[in-house]
Image 1 (spheres, rainbow, N blue to C red):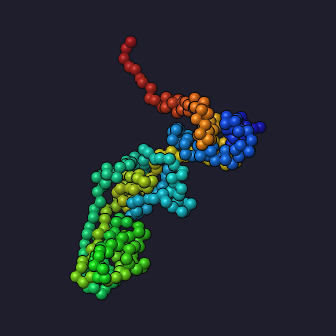
Image 2: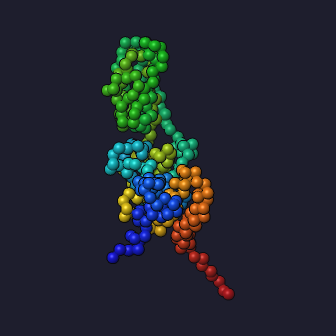
Image 3: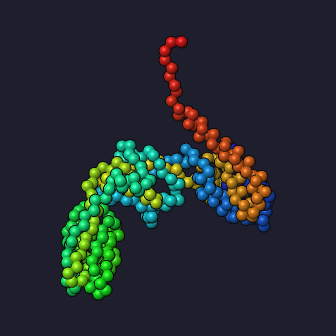
Length: 316
């Protein structure tokens, strides 16, 4: 026997509601595929901005790696927890736990790096002779990834040459692709395309660190940086708001069935806005706000149930 939710709150029912309130009963007026686009556009991009519900709240988990401080959301590995991060989550927040210990979260680079300043070492790794292009050197270590800078003066143009690392141990710039850097040992092998000028210093600048268990994270531009830089693997757990799920087939239902009418009205308003039907949008707005209030009551009741009861003591 089907449950009421499976009959009342499916994508098919949402489509019917959208057609009714926009007065577009036929495919000739607006296709089902177009309606689905409006529905999912509202679910994925507008709805998370309007409401923040505990039903969309979860825990984002990842594991640190020794010596790696920054964890990027741009990944093509589908097994990586950061894969498609920007489309799965709208934002992250406190609390943050690192191996079970309550930790700090920062969103300001200024605050974060005031507390955890970068330790920069700058040394002369060699002196150019106008002929030699290949150099090896072992400098300060361990080294923060993407902090390596090699600079000198070109013998050909008398202009500054700047070489950096790509975070994977490879050096990029005016160098041979085989040029490498070891973050753990500080060893560098660099092969310039043009020899450094005679008598010119070849400078190596790196950020060094002492590794230990992280106690803070920086969330900035959808990337997570941890400090101190980890000495081993740690489990990081962060509260996060997920995006609502798309509705792709006729029998699909919203994450919470009670959202179906709210989604219907929201999608309908998007259709009317695109048609510049301002009067139609105005007529739907009170219905939209009413549904928003009804949905919000669930959170109010939940919060009320979480309040610590006041205990009175003493005589009457």
